[in-house]
Image (cartoon, rainbow, N blue to C red; front, side, top):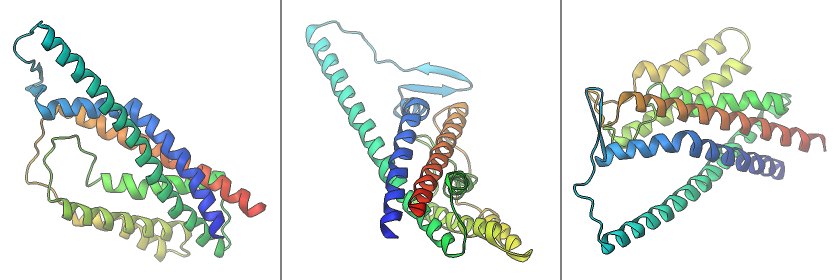
Length: 243
């Protein structure tokens, strides 16, 4: 049983992590890098006006050109290392999520619930709702330089929301009668009724349009990766069960 769980989670996690990394490079990273330009002051935004804050002077001395080329090479090396780290972290993270997901498959099998690739897709979407979408209703993805409340309080709220959403979805999906599904809905809503920790006001150096694009693309990439994770994990799980 453990070997089946490990194999299914490993294949699914690597596949989902690679797809998530590629989608992030295409959709999320450009927005993130632009957000960093606002954080560092290379760009500024005020009253709907974009300002490019360039350094004064454009020297053409050989030493200055050499320094510029060296800085460009260093930036390219840093970018490659950053992208490689992003891909590795994605694969490790989604492999961990895959282990949890397949453990859920195994638990469901004890109650006679069979999981296939198609039903695994639904499990993956449920994981996306629990881990990303529901918490984002209170703590949305933020660009660099965005002020936020105390990180410990935010982490507590995020963990509570994930656990409550997972249990609530399980009650809704597998609960019998009326009261268990109703209790599931109540659990999902409870963290949002309490409310996530926030500052008293809103502040940020990037344009709100860029922040909204970052949130939308981050959630879209997460949805695609979780759907693939559930589909692939369900496929390998069903294959291992029939073997």
